Image 1 (tube, rainbow, N blue to C red):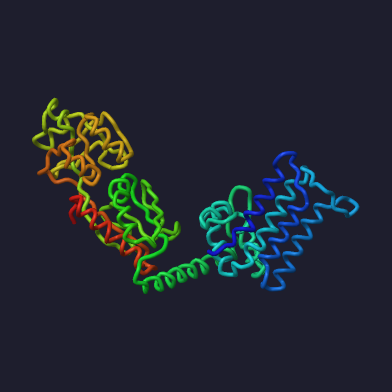
Image 2 (cartoon, rainbow, N blue to C red):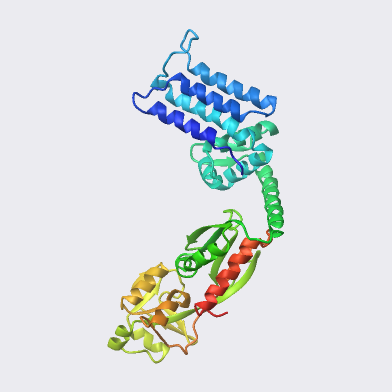
Length: 392
């Protein structure tokens, strides 16, 4: 969403000046702000100019004394009112060029985020810009779309119906944009990727330098999370997921297989012995992974082996660190320890006993064509996993 940011920046400058020093601002600052507004309005519709003049008139009126004459300085006691008026005054030129479609996008993001502040962060713009865009949209429609409260913003009955339509409109716009981008030969643009915590640091980030050098027109935003993210709602282009089967309704490419392996340090095994059969695991010190259903009962070689973990953790990196510290046996995905196994700092045991497997998938929404930037990144990740010894 294209937003002119210099007006908002000037508004923040004015407010900061008002709060500084003797906490007073000379009127020439506001005259300068008015000049910026007139520059931003050049060439726009007359009704937009008149609307802004009305806001400016209200603002300047707030600066006047009781006899209608403007004092030289603005008193601090009016700071809150003046700040609100500045929000409105500077949001008007900031949003005048956004058009109806931007107002729709702002409305949809507010509904999804539940607040104007969160929506502004997602849209990377000022809260006042989002608020003004939604207000202008409501004025054009002649209907109230949102119920505003101090805790949460919720759509009205009319707003819920309008949101459903607008959501489909934005999805169609995104599909059209990606279809146009797919016609490009060179991958380009911002790529938002979600990946499991721990996986990104080990298998995505190390190869990014080479990928970005090969595709200088791509920018990457990487988000790590313990659980699956909402691709469409949170605006991700794709996600890397480790699961037995990905969720329905997504386009999927299998990149590799993740196998659970039982490992320990050579020092631990030298002291406590190497388990020969799955049942031997019960006599060892074990490290459990809390999120899994088999945190205290490991499925090995067709058997369910009950264990009593001396340590439970809900983080893959902590599980790996505990195993490397020699605390005991650990069962964790091979992608988390493939380097340690190759280096000999960890040793696999019970390799012949079957253990749970999952797929490592690249997934993206069904309503989007695979843009060149996505295809290039997925191919890069697949090649990197093969190079690290993670098979299909």
